[in-house]
Image (cartoon, rainbow over all chains, first blue to last red; front, top):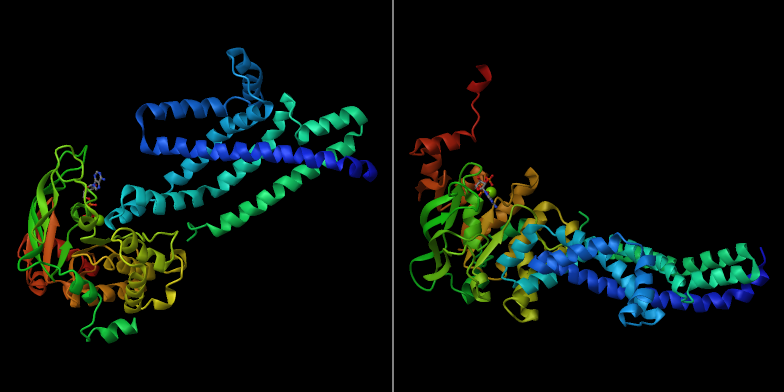
Length: 217
Length: 287
Ligand SMILES: Nc1ncnc2c1ncn2[C@@H]1O[C@H](COP(=O)(O)OP(=O)(O)OP(=O)(O)O)[C@@H](O)[C@H]1O
Ligand SMILES: [Mg+2]
């Protein structure tokens, strides 16, 4: 292994990692917001909106992210909407992640026992108070493992944005391999970069799981 | 539990703080009055509760008995406002609490309305995301908008009473079933409910934990708290009851102001039959 080569190109990977983290971060925040909205619609059983959410979840989960990105990056301009590659990447990730987060959060909300809500009601809580102080904390604690798994999945999935010429970790790796033919070193740098990004997420996830594991009996 | 037993003789007791600030009844008469109550679940062919009427005078302990499926839980749930009713009305201290709704919807209750009734369920229902103290303090602070410091002081007094002062910072999952039920009782009491409802609160407990919970309820009875108790613990029912009601097939089959007499010499055949299910006869062994 050529460590000199790796040290030389490492700064490129640092910059690329910023791009991956930037895209992933905003994609994830939007995914969670979208997921919460969708779950709220499903839980409140809003007539038409519920069907829309159902259709969205199926469409989003059953099409590849690459296709969703191509649609945003190459398709939308034909309709007169031109977004930057960054915007397309973030919106694409959010579109995909929203459905995964919806399913993860829904599991948490459905797991809140009915007697919890009834206790809150007899104690005089309003529906909003019950939602904020009983339902949400318990639902989130149950959903944490699934949400963390989705976060890691989406960060990895963000490598697809290299296909629309965004200089993320994957893009830089392909570039480097093309220029230097040092495939082995390039891929090693790629793996290290992803580990540096994902391991802390994994660790924080485990800590959160422990901290909020209310359900253990 | 030693402190419970030690304080039973004293005048200070679980419900006194509440009773002083919120008199259980305005003047004379019933704390809780149920009139021609009809409850039928959607999709059910017959009502579970069919024209039930009774009065619970202030300070009385009402024990409701009946076979499985006779509607005991349903009755408590209608009083607690968890089930809409199809006929009749429930009043508390002379004020309307629940009534039949044509649309099958529950009348929206005001915050003060909704804290008139306290309930403890069979399943342990403490909020797992709150500590013991957090569970007890949440409703008085959030719903009744009471001062946090005084609520905390009262919560600690209640915990002391049920012998759990040292567990105030524990999480529900760290407690035994009996301890959780005692905390659940504190959580209901701190709102100073006029009526407490207990639905088979010891049914899911190991036998050695039943006692510690029932002792708390007995002490509460001595303090003058009005309550309705559903239980399968006959020895306890006999000890605690001022009034016994036997529910079967949607109606009150027999009731009595003399619990000892009811248990020893029930009048109706249905009551005799029901009570017989709790006794075992050595004669059965031979046959
Ligand atoms: N949510 C519901 N929907 C439809 N039917 C119900 C519902 N809850 C209870 N029932 C029915 O109503 C009847 C009375 O039930 P309830 O739980 O009040 O009985 P119970 O006297 O408390 O019985 P147990 O001693 O087993 O707790 C039963 O036949 C039951 O199947
Ligand atoms: Mg029951």
